[in-house]
Length: 287
Image (cartoon, rainbow, N blue to C red; front, side, top):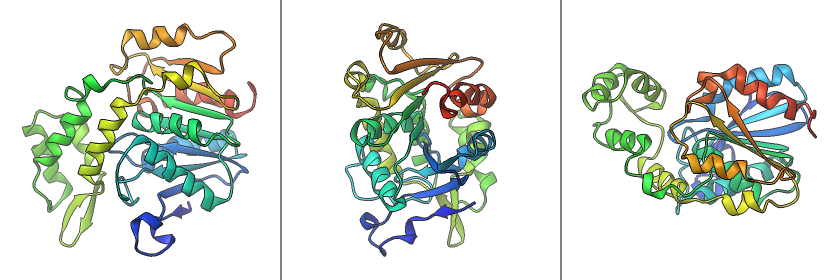
């Protein structure tokens, strides 16, 4: 399982280094997979392995977005567009343009930005449970901002991962969320600290909520197909978002998919259903 690490490139200056990625598959067609906020590329390994098993002509690069996982934070401003530019720099080092970009949640808007700004060679863009609207008014009440606030209240380093569970419980957060967050701890010296940069993550999520991709979806450029996937039990969508997609003309290259039996965490809640939706497009059935 090859990994492209940020330290592979151009010395110690973080702005001359690259994002970290894990490669799954060896096929000639390239897909980039982008995690959500506070996640990492490793969250999508099971999904990518299953996709490659079904279609070995594909290779999936599981990206750690800036300030996440093993990628550098880079210099700000930290925005959705900056993440897309990071991907372009990574792609240039590979020497092959992606045929597909798949992004979940925060990564969904990064995928849309990449398709808008760097469409050459791109065949399809997937935004998984990532409403395209400007939802800036929802920032303060969003779960992820509440989690970030909780993380700021935890004194680091921790001696071990189990210390995180009661700290999360004390702030009213679930054990499942705490268990997931333990995967974002890394050893530094004698203790454990976060893999991500909280200040940069806060800036990224603020920009995510402000971004409006309706101008792109209502007047898409020639080139890729655009896929907006909505989980049927997701709480991230306003009714007007789905209504606006439904009003797009039949000839539009924008496709609205609904994933049944799933909340926001589509690759965890219904992985087989997610793959079933994607596989016909990755097999060229709808090309």
